Image 1 (cartoon, protein in one colour):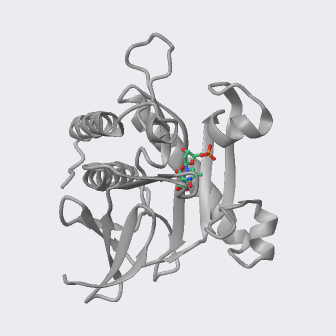
Image 2 (image 1 turned 120 degrees about the vertical axis):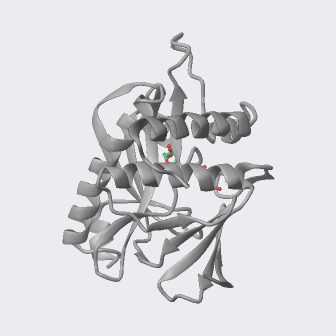
Length: 249
Ligand code: TMP
Ligand code: ASP
């Protein structure tokens, strides 16, 4: 497989074409941003950790029957993904109130929700990824009602599986963001990344009840270095894959 032209440079990844029209070459960067790029830093080791963490999580989810666009990891910071047609949506699931949800409704961060909440944001840097509901998505032609029913079903399923995965490594999955798209056979699949950049992960290990962030809130809120936290997540996930007999390259 050959890495060819750069197709797109996002805030955390670069996408390249390859000699196979159905395959994308994805490079994870060390760049960290917050607040729509208002805060920006280069953090040595972040690209490699996120490339590896996405690899383990996608392999763990695939082992439980989740369909993804992931092909394989090809280097420290790079992986191959199937080229799919992405829905321009950030798909967010919340189990516990935190971040923008806690702020929006004036709730204390950490409040347990009576049921999980599925939210959508329209991916547009110019518009700062505004909140959107299914009616808006369908009205704008971003996806059909049937596609959104399937996206919602898959996201709830992924949420249950991810919550269990993190629980098994003594981490509380507070909320997360995923992205989905349609592959060449017209199937809706999980895509993009799942990393501590895109999840809120609270350590349950010390049991004191004090929130210990193992995610990008460390960077967003200037609470400390993200690398030891991301390394800890990676180490625990690798041990879980081993316990579950899931092979990770
Ligand atoms: P929020 O509370 O800031 O809306 O974030 C909810 C979840 O989505 C949290 O786990 C972080 C993740 N997220 C992203 O992955 N990308 C984004 O651009 C935003 C705003 C949130
Ligand atoms: N808002 C994103 C985040 O906090 C990153 C960014 O917008 O720069 O994850």
